[in-house]
Each structure stands twice: as structure tokens, then as C-alpha cells.
Length: 114
Image 1 (spheres, rainbow, N blue to C red):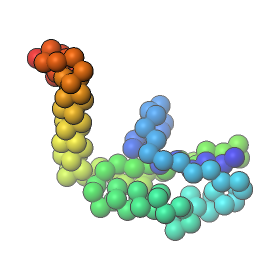
Image 2 (image 1 turned 90 degrees about the vertical axis):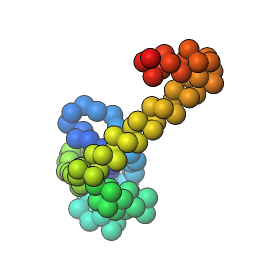
Image 3 (image 1 turned 135 degrees about the vertical axis):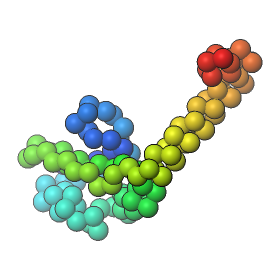
């Protein structure tokens, strides 16, 4: 199998933050899709457009027994960084609320570091 993956950071950093992936039977199909975004599945095309519009970092990786390639599709912009920080904080608060529902005020406070 030949796999194309979209990641939120450089895969050479040994992160495992895969957004989505698609497998191809033929290497030629995978290589063509890697080089021409219009040949990717709709979901991947949408993710690429969103990354470029919202300004967040996105990498594409082609992993195959016939070779490995990686390229940055979208660099994080200042607005994208602010959005990511805001979303990270919203997610942290959501997790704290869930801890609070499970373990009461102490669970919320512990999660928030109070």
C-alpha cells in the first residue's frame, strides 16, 4: 500500500498528529495525487483549503515501499497561531468541565491547576 497523510506539523519531528490519511493501491496514483491536489479525495482537498484559509500549518507525506516524500502545504500565520491558542484553551476548559462533572469541583480545579 501507498499512503498519503496530512499532518499538523512536520512529520520529521517524530510527532503523531495525523489529520487524515488515504491509501492507494498503485504507487503511480499516490504519486500523482501527492503532486496534484485535485486528485486527492474530497475530504483531503477540503482540509488543505481550510488550512490555507485559516492559516494553520499542514504537511503532506507520501509513504510507500517505493519511497518517502514530505512537503509543507501551509505555514502557520500569526492569525492561525492565535486561533490555535484560543482553541487549545477552549479544549482545556472543556476537559476541565468534564473532570468536574466526574469528580466535582476538586476534579475541575486539579485539571485547571488551581
